[in-house]
Length: 441
Ligand code: XUL
Ligand code: CO
Image (cartoon, rainbow, N blue to C red; front, side, top):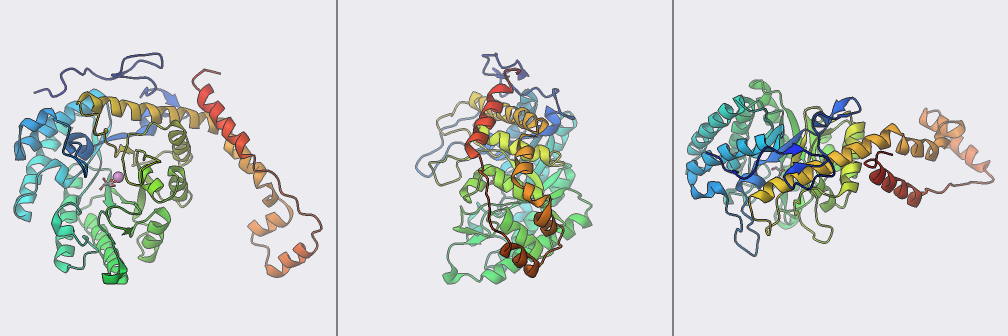
């Protein structure tokens, strides 16, 4: 059965195309530096937003009626798998991602939930045999069901800690079965509302214990996926333990986990934390911790996680700059953790949204590559930090100074000069690159 009858294979038609169902900039085989666009961009479709979400928001019911909604229960889950693989093929995406509950409904007992999962996982495995689309990552949803009201691994209730562990154990087995490249931990309710009833130390210690058990079990079953922590500062809890990359990195180091994890960085989570997307990517990159990306964007006027498809070219350019400087994303990718707006309720919107996101990252990749070829930021930094290349600056970075030596030096200074940071000139240069990269100049 076909679910997207009116959509043909999405192809690259170039910047002048007016076909809404074509790529204007994403040309998978095109070489950018030493890799193809497809190798750099490693796009993934998020199962939950694309095949499960229906546009429900806190004030209104779902607006989206999908072709698979004529079924319910396991029949609907099976229809979603068929639709998903048709969608992946038509869009020509290399990857997809899911939570356990996205692919199969929960049963009345954990055992029944496992059985539902096994049935759908076998079906997905079968479809993957004839598909180029692979599993970028899977995870488990330990936050939606009311049992997770006080958290999962950080719940005050030890039974919930155990239940959460069982679900992650199964998630690791599913990831192995489907050859997942990564396994993601987003601490949905791993945080707290108020300290008035929270033992922060016990909760964080338990989270550390939980992660060690996950690492151990993956080793036991020879599941060699890259483990990723996905930071988010708030929502659903007021204080999430994995607030941002820096906080997550401190947690990993504190519990001796830093060699087993990298980060999955989501743009909208970065902005919720009061950072830019590129700040989080840079923090991870310079610490060797950049693993994968949840590619979306937030609304600057709204203080929650709107998960929009990424279309801000300035942001995609600066993100791709970090990714190229990282030598690519390795086993990671760019997962569209993004949903069509509630008003974009027609099924065609799913294609248009992904095309918009893929084209925006393709533009970002080309512009960032040009900026790097011309060493634009590298030259700016070279000049701006030139005081560390000679004299006292060189002594500082080579570890040849102490406070006595620095005081002697400072006392001898008669005239200190600073140079302009030239921010406006730099921003104008980035704009020039954005506009000229596609003008062929
Ligand atoms: C929630 C979020 C999740 C994770 C996976 O904000 O980003 O969907 O990506 O659990
Ligand atoms: Co995400």
